[in-house]
Length: 442
Image (cartoon, rainbow, N blue to C red; front, side):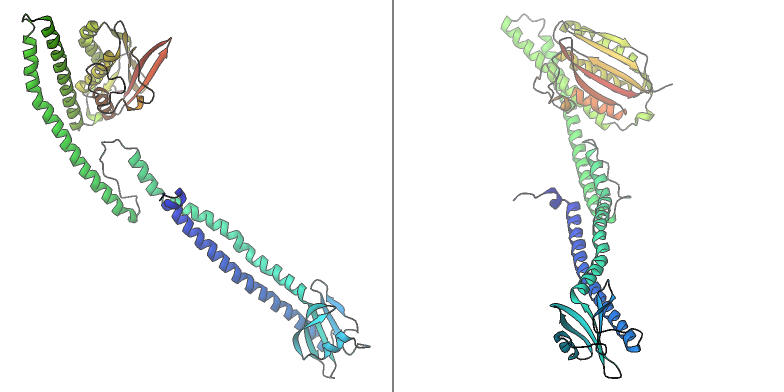
């Protein structure tokens, strides 16, 4: 069974469809009653006109001859007077046989409404009106009565749509708030500006967020404890591997020791990244209360630390541009940002390649830019490179997939922004990572 159309399955669509049906049904029923009432009122008004004309004839204010004379041309009302009739026709003979009062008769093959009256001297007269004309006048008046109701229905539908949309606006804002949050943002949803009908729903969501926060804290604690406990045996294993260097081993054994050293190094790097991630997630300091540091000095220190490794890899690492830039943040956190970016760039930069670092000072932001000449990132993956443990289709080197995730979390905590774009200039490829941090002054 399919979910149906969005108009039917959505709450807004159901409210609008239900209210539309009520308005249309009420309008149709009300219009029918109004049309019937106005039609009958018009008929009664025309009967009143016939009575008034008959009163004028009875008092002698209006006289009639043998022939029918138009008294009201628009309404086609006629008067025939028996006293002025020279001879009787078959129609008039039947007419005089009618009793006093209203009756239906036929004149020249057309039905008419007749009011018969008798004078004091015994003579009679008739006031008549064609039935089709009476119905036409009554229908026109009834239509004029129903017309405002028909015009009001679209206005009511428009007002209903606006009211429904505005009534559900808090739900839309609530959904937007949830969609715009980071995955690790477990802040309770506010209830102050929300309708009371949504309070139970919001309370349930807040309860779920609280339980998820507890689970995430347990996960973080487990990761930090596990990484911390594993550092000691990994350090001992690494020491034992280093002790094998002076030992005279066969070539095949040395190859295996080199592979073992590489694996131990990769595990140690992963543990360091996990501990860094745990420390960053556990940090609660607000960026506004952090000290002011020089981004360019920290970047220079990190580049100096990594130069030997870059030289061993055959990578030209250096600065293409450096401005003096002040930012607020913990020096270790900012150093971790620069180190992880450069480490990621070196892992993907081929031998004899180059990595250019930039530090700019903008009007309201300090910018750190790292360009490499590696293969770049697939277009369908570039939006995911900041996710934890994501390594893409080209998981090269000993990376753990946590470096850029740690960078993203630190930059978010410092109130900055980060983006990654592929480079394609002059036939060269590469990846550019650009970080903007709020500038600070002493």
